[in-house]
Length: 150
Ligand SMILES: CC(C)(COP(=O)(O)OP(=O)(O)OC[C@H]1O[C@@H](n2cnc3c(N)ncnc32)[C@H](O)[C@@H]1OP(=O)(O)O)[C@@H](O)C(=O)NCCC(=O)NCCS
Image (tube, rainbow, N blue to C red; front, side, top):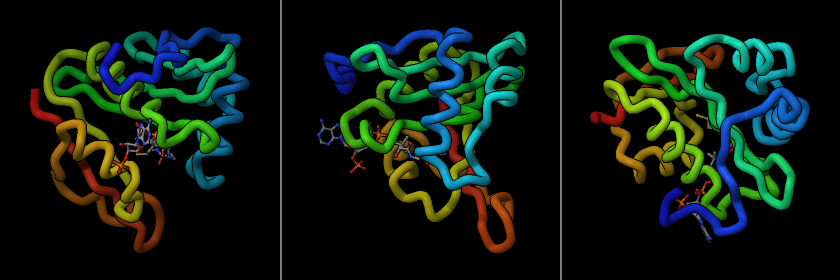
């Protein structure tokens, strides 16, 4: 799908049978309060218009990205890669896949200000800072809006 995509990784639409594995990688990748659990993932899987993509390596789910289109913008709702599979291009491949799957209007997302690893990825992929959401992640934990103009 892209020059960055590792040869042994497949990026495809999520199936219901993937969701337990996605819930597991969410718990591994995020702090407890930010992980999406099975009910939320199931909801996102069935909502019309939501694009839910997974990365698969050796038959195992190693990453996910979820997004939607809201008329004036497309959004990345959630991006996560299993820590055991990070730093090998999976996050880049997933971000490029959601960018391609949601081609209308600008692509926006919110990242925690301290999350420099994710922010670096977004900057490298053409996103620019687009405002602060004060205390979005809790007291004194701001979110950084980022936008990719398309
Ligand atoms: C942010 C996140 C999705 C990135 O996923 P990832 O799979 O590690 O991303 P990539 O591998 O594509 O890129 C990460 C780094 O690895 C580097 N990299 C990619 N392939 C590589 C390879 N084969 N060898 C060495 N380095 C490589 C990239 O250049 C990049 O370097 P940089 O940080 O200096 O820019 C992941 O860290 C994650 O899930 N974090 C926890 C959840 C989270 O914060 N989600 C985002 C919320 S907004």
